Amino acid sequence: MPTILIADDSMFQRFQTSKTAVAAGYDVLEAKDGQECLRIILEKRPEVLLLDLNMPALDGLAVMEQLAAQGAIPPRVYVLTADIQDTTRQRCLDLGAHDCINKPVDQAVLGNILAEARTSLG
Image (cartoon, rainbow, N blue to C red; front, side):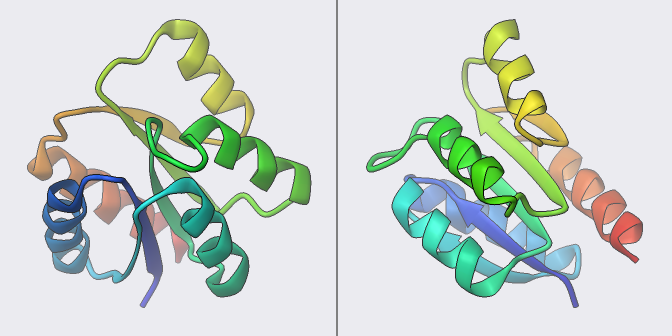
């Protein structure tokens, strides 16, 4: 079973997204900030990362930059954000994100994205 890391400072968002990820067949890990996210990725190597851009300690872009510098970008990274400008979206994609998903996240859409990602991971 693939592992997904949900990195979001909102406990409610982590809870909602966890339910969707479990239903899509993932083992779920959670991080409440960017520092915790980096530590878990380097220790556990999840196949999928759902990354909020606006988090304390390190924001999502800083997490992506550090992961890219270490060659540790997970196979599938989805950036979650309430307000994404084209330049920010492009920066996320350049750093290795698979896609950007607008908040509030539609859980049905997210379920489809996670199911597709799980299939592509083999």
